[in-house]
Length: 168
Image (cartoon, rainbow, N blue to C red; front, side, top):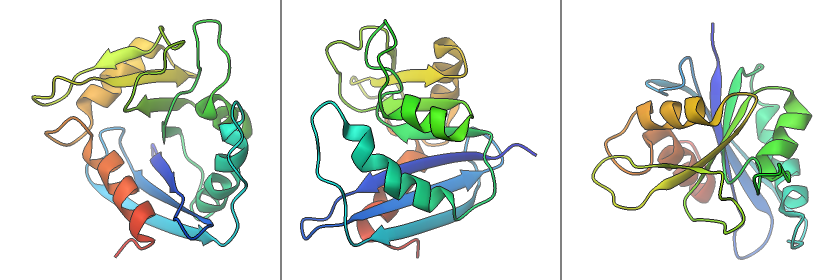
């Protein structure tokens, strides 16, 4: 059976990190079958050009809460430019060895290769990059994800539970 996950990390003002994961048996993420949240009291500081160093520890911790995945969606970019400079998603892919789709809400100027995906009635695109599958296929998966709005329901859900620190 296919297992797909979507992850996000939130950094509360008082420090630490909260990572959340939702899991489904389909890349459409309908229905979501699992939710996991972990909190780490200490988070590494942000380093320009090395964002992944801050994100990987909480992501690894929340991913350890479930069985293996076949596909992962991250909030951000897989590659940062057409030459393949690794972003968060590429580092996650290297750590897990599975296909990763990056979905970013804002453009990153060097990422001219990102596929713009419009969902719902939004006039603002999402920026999709991928590792381990064709960018066009990744964009099609994001377009097909459950939810009527710009942000797919699974990505909204993982953002909400990472911010609240609870899946209830």
